[in-house]
Image (cartoon, rainbow over the protein chains, first blue to last red):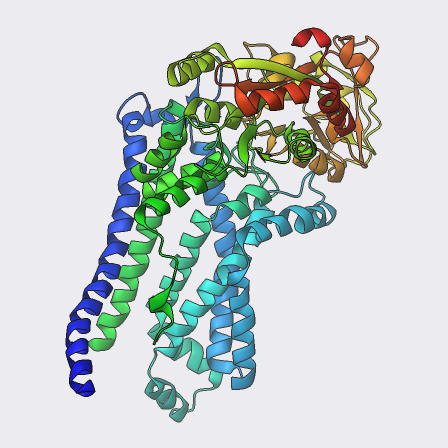
Length: 302
Length: 329
């Protein structure tokens, strides 16, 4: 009797559970589109209205609060985001991929587990804490080492962002290396290749796409990061001329200014236009990463 | 088997929405906006439904909540007031948040707080917006004075600076980019470059400084280090020998020196003190305001009356600001 009841229950429950899971899956897609829609909707009246797109992309004057003439030029902010992200990538891609190769190929198994946990712990540190480290610890160090007048600048932000991106690049990169079939390694060793030759002659070409995707995900992380760069880059609207110049990024601008704006005002809407721009940038980076990963699968299947 | 199925407290839809509304009320403006990003229209419904209430949790008699948000210059002061007011009126809790004078005034327009703290005067356009949203013009209370201090690193030999020189340092098209150009031999600053520390543009201090130093027709030069808090400015100056920055007089700390200020170059400078702010000999002394939507009633009025009383003014003096002149009421 009980058995039959349980069977009936499971027959009822199964479609229900399936529906719930299906809903969860669809809701993720729904929310992404909803967020994009709302961000775009808030910015749209300005985007198609008073905003001069030529000025928006080519002017360095970001004066949204001016009493004389409000100016919305994001070139300096774009330059800030680009310079900090580029430096972060320059530091974190070699370090992250190097860590991935070491952990996946050279590391004794026991050390590997510890190392992975420790590096992934870096990813668990909140970004405000990273910003705080940049502001309090790295700032005086950079002043002392480089002789710069101020230590919260591109270099500081780049180092902090690199530290934040390394765990992502390492875990995704390691997965890509793990996905290379062991037969490749065995064949290479059988041909008399040294361990290092196995890595750069066989594994790197085979896992190329996965490693590229790892780097792109790291870029996505850097472009979108807010709190840490707000604190570590100096938050100064200017086109940088050296690594030691303070800059301001797109994300930090939204974070610092959105609270002030009145709902529906021009300044409020321009910040949402910047939000739309950031979402497009993140979308492009993720799409590229995705296509590249798809490329990996296609090759392995074929 | 009988665990989670028999949970005694089931939150009904109605109660849940109450919880959500409470949540939105307690959090800062910024959080509400972030919420707005996430749930869009839903959050704005929650906001507008709270806009006309001044008392705390609906139906409960335990406590009344006054939401006080705004000026970062005044956030320490607001906090001290809130703590001391708790001793006078234990059943009233004052929720204090900073963010900047602009955040407070924006909140007043959006109707998500009871009192806005501001270190600058509300603008005509903002008055019109409050009047449109609330049906009554905002009411201003001058609760104290602040001598806006200009800070440099303690190793910087400069003692006094004029408003004219500040305009050349901070203003758009200004000619003074190096300490030597200002006639200062700042040996601890190797690069000789003046690092201008400023505030983000929702700050009342920023708006006041711009107007007091540059007037209404000149912009600040871009490229300053914009900090989001009064304390951050002073803390950054204390660690940066090349820096100059401005902040409330109550934020002085070890490692920095507040400069004497004169109107014109060559005139003797006046230090930022209680006396010089009161007799207005200090060139950049400014009132600190509390704003309400229309004439306040009930708990908000009682709180402001208390803040202007001898007890409230003593708290303000202990924090480091100057009591409001008696006429201001």
